[in-house]
Amino acid sequence: IFHKYQSKNVSKKLKTRAQREYKIVQYVQRLVRQRSDIVIRRTDKSKVFYIGKAADFERKAEEYMLKTEAYEEIKNGRCPLADNLHAVQTLFDYLVTKKALTKKQSNRLIPKLNSLEVGHYHGIPKPHKPKTPLRPIVASIHAPATLASKFLNDILAPIYLKVTRKYTFVNDIDVIRQLEKYVADGYFTSRTKFITIDDENLYTMIPRDGALTALARFYVKYCYQGKIGTFTIDHIMKMAGLILDTNCFAYNNKYYKQMSGGATGAAFTQVLANIYLMEWEQDLIEHQIEHHEVYGRYIDDIFMTTNKTMDEINIELEKAKHKDINIKIDPTISKSVHYLDVTI
Image (tube, rainbow, N blue to C red; front, side, top):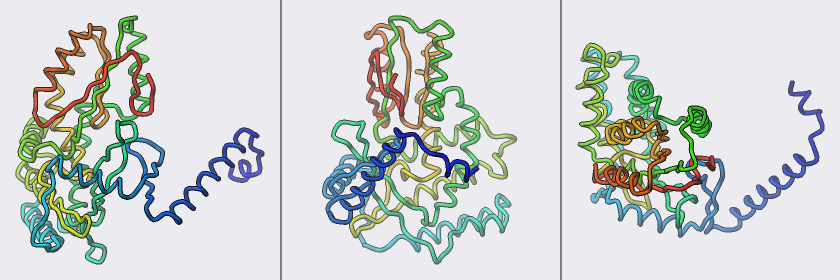
């Protein structure tokens, strides 16, 4: 098969495109080597890269930290790595004694000491937003609680997705299929408008206690005989608290601890934010069901259809805006919108 495709002549159009893109790659490589003030980052929720000035990235990152007040500098300047590792080991020992984890599972979840490191903070650009803001990312692949975060996500995410699959977009193809069904069912009219809603700073702005309370309610509602797997609610809440409490990172030669929300980029953060947002969005979902309209969410981006007047739908959106002070939404209503990688 490989030989067949390698020996086959490509079309002139494809060859021209490949040559053009190769030149672009070479140009970007030269630019990054020659300009120390330039950085290249992948963009948020897209398959392209963004080239910008390092100073702009640094300024926007610091502005975000000041604006959200989600991060607190560790004033003593001491690296939190050892304390966080001890907290992880202590919890896993407890879970082994309670038979929630086997010793073998516990050993797999303890990070390797020779690769252990504190997380690092950076931002990825959102060029589809005015002034290209940054989405904060804490790269913590070798942090003490990273494997615990993935473990807890693996327990909770399948349950969450099963419960919410009807109103969760997996990708842009999912959106198109929903719209095709909407049209086929006869609900698309000349009055139909599209709504996109961006939930601003979702991961960093959800309140710690509020998110854990929502998680506890989710557990009680969807557990089986008082457990999810081998975990009781006490085990789930202890591990969730540990993950949030050890959200620390280094930035500009200083150490910080995240005080609200979870680390963007951590596996558990996404399912925790989804569970918190699931409670908030129920009124909108019920409204859309009642009026035979589409509702779907991809992480913190919501898509809806409506045949209501602008005044009528704005009343519903205003209710959503004031339902939770921690959830700040920015709706756009139009006959044509851009959502994920699709223009509708």
